[in-house]
Amino acid sequence: MEALRALVAAGASHVTGTFAPTSPYGAPSLLGGLLFALGWYLWRRRARGRPIRLQAFLRMMFPRRILLHASSRVDLGLWILNTIVFASGYVLLALGAFFWRDRAISALTGLFGAHGPLGVPPGLALLISTLAELLVYEFAYWGAHYLFHRIPALWEFHKVHHSAEVMTTLTEMRQHPVEIIAFMNAISLATGLTFGLMTYMFGPGIGHITLLNGNIALTLFMLTWGHLRHSHLWIPVQGLAGKLFQSPAHHQIHHSLDPRHYDKNLGFALAIWDWAFGTLHIPSRENEVAEFGVGEEYEDYATVARSLARPFAKASEALRQGPPAPIAGDVRVP
Image (cartoon, rainbow, N blue to C red; front, side):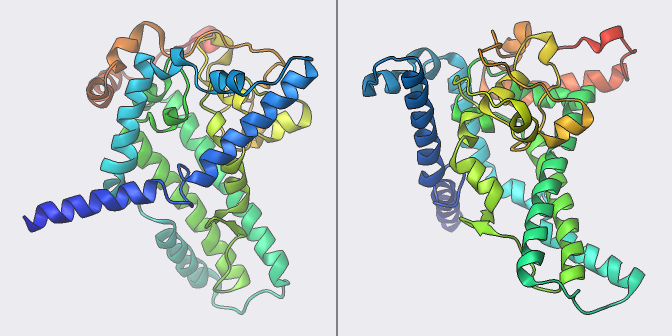
């Protein structure tokens, strides 16, 4: 009985945390995304000289064909598992940023000796640390994402995410646990080592500029169009801004079945690493994505159970086959 009570309490705690104000699925982020979409709707309707109606906005935001789609039901199931049921397990399987920060400080002290903080104004040190964390976070995300696209065995796990045939905000967590654990560790390693270096340079207590307990830049992203990355709303960013930031249209291109979009736009909030490494595809003004998903392989991911089990079998087969022979143009499933 005590074990059951503890299990119920843990589940309640995860539910509460999932919808906490500082959570990506808390009211500030969800409301922020809705308000950003409303602003985009108002701008687009006025630019086209069309009437503004609340009913039209709600139909645009919550179309029945997407909400009732079979793919959306899988999204919901995996979202519940990944954000509530499995959440504590993921934490136990990840070496946190503080662990890697302390390892970095010890290594730097052993190599170069202890020293006092550099004579940098606190405000400047805080700004440098904030920008460094953002860039390193994005690089770790881009790097892990690239590997999950380019290594066949890892790609089999990442296909769970790409199997979505419609986009909703819950598609963000349509991921296999193997992928989530890998991304968590990659980002923790990168940001932890970075803060170890920042602490060694600027002294204990150095942090980043925060908003809702997160890096201010990443939080602002989630408070605006972050949740619209996985949506049917074609909101492109072009020009120089399109080389710096990931718009919703950038990420819809990433999910596209069009071969010219394969392995493009791998970043999270920023596009700079895609720009630097040649994986950037800036979206056009008009929607250029006709279809999402993995085509004929969808049946392998048509239920939550299949999405969890099938990747292990398919990854094992990929490992047995070894690396594929190079193909001109490197045409592959998205």
